[in-house]
Image 1: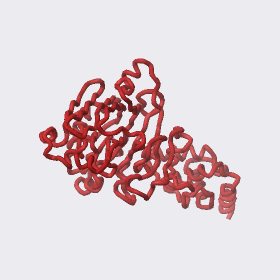
Image 2: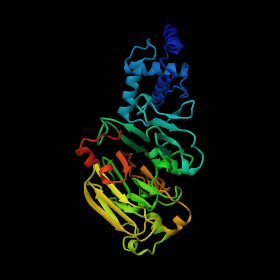
Image 3: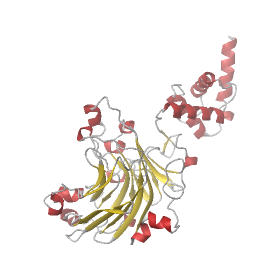
Image 4: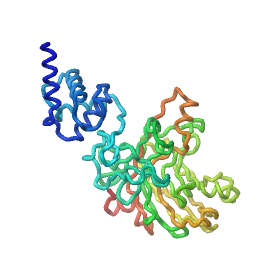
Length: 389
């Protein structure tokens, strides 16, 4: 009876509204506790007996004073345990509809970060989520899928870089497969270049590792693309080859609509190989692109990788059918897309004993302009120019 009275008084103290620091901190505690197997009830940011009893149980297991209310010490130990075990927490939702993950709290967000709730569940061309000012979200609906980060994350220049992450379980429970197998941000059409006009763009790309997989895994991702028709095939795509040894350029829209076009026949729509995925792992890859998104035989596409010219394609880039449909601007998308709507189902069916990795990619210093001097990070760095943070 005495033990019951002590526990009851502890729960009353912990359940008192005065102990709650903020609603988000209660939400953090609930998500952490549930993720660690302590039943804190619904993750709603509202303090109650389930949350109080779960916190008492956790504190007792950790040797923390159970007479104390929820405080920074509890949250710090909870987060430490979650990160040490590698628990993947489900995202809760804030009152404005924004998904929330305590491992990416708003206090760590870059000022450019925002959540675009208006597009969620609407036109498939406008899948909402997390993005940055001047860009639109494309299925970055979970907090870990897109962030602007700083050290200890890799940063090419300045203080921040963009981080994209896709976890194996992101696919599960999504309303559409394309919500779970992609994490991209999309250029606003008002800032997109017109086809048949000279254009320069540059960015830096980083990954710790990429697998080498054959087509039976259903994994054929894109690490950046341009689309003239947002719902159509990309006119230019950067993706690993089947087998994963190299990243190459794919002119998908041309090869789909004009497969007999002579400059693409021998390469099967892949005119240029850019870099070896294994050799470049763990280093920043500086990419410079000059193209006109040409709709005639006079089109061109030049790509430099780490200051070395790796692509000199001459020929049509935007097919006749796409031009005739009235599309006139090339919209850039960057991030990660698995490349097939059957991923990861195909992987799990064909290779059930092979664990699907979490894919994490970084981008930095994305710039567009009218000359190489405006966009090339190596030239800008050499003259001490400002960073894009």
